[in-house]
Image (cartoon, rainbow, N blue to C red; front, side, top):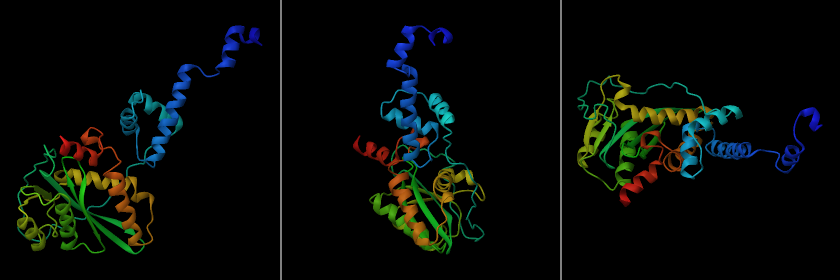
Length: 270
């Protein structure tokens, strides 16, 4: 057999002792780790985030190698889909200036917050979700859900953010020009707590890109795979995604693939 295959007897017996070569052994081991992370994050991670996760575990690898191994295993992160905006700016009320001007970085927590509203389909009808995000860590610090898109939706979410962040003052709070954000209730809460109102230009989604980005992740990584029978089931699912996954487990590209909750904590500890 060795003569026919043109291999040495020594090579054959070495192969019997160690059928897989060192390189193949390392790649097989890497494949297992990649698949573990991919499944742990429910197919939400592509090669870049998997690379960041393995790097944090001191696993020697490169992003290109991970991309190639994922392709060979046919591991594909969840696909992109479009979703509908919910802004109603045809209210004729006074609006605030755009103080951010698409400057979405922050030097410290509670310097700049952004907020927006989206909708979640359920068999019972729409469920509306409002979030407030700290631009320093991209943590979702306040959220609220309701079957009605009224002022209370944003007021409740901002109230949660204020309690969680221990009522900081001087924070720039940016949103679109939706009727909820120009309401007396919301504007009164801002002023009472020393917060500075900022608003996007009409119809310019780029003025509130971080909020759009969060909703994009939520829809692609969770909502588009679900068909919620009730609003309560949707609420439970979204709360788990925000509090247990997005804030505490998911690596965010804007903060160098760190995790929002721990990125905040590292600043506080410094």
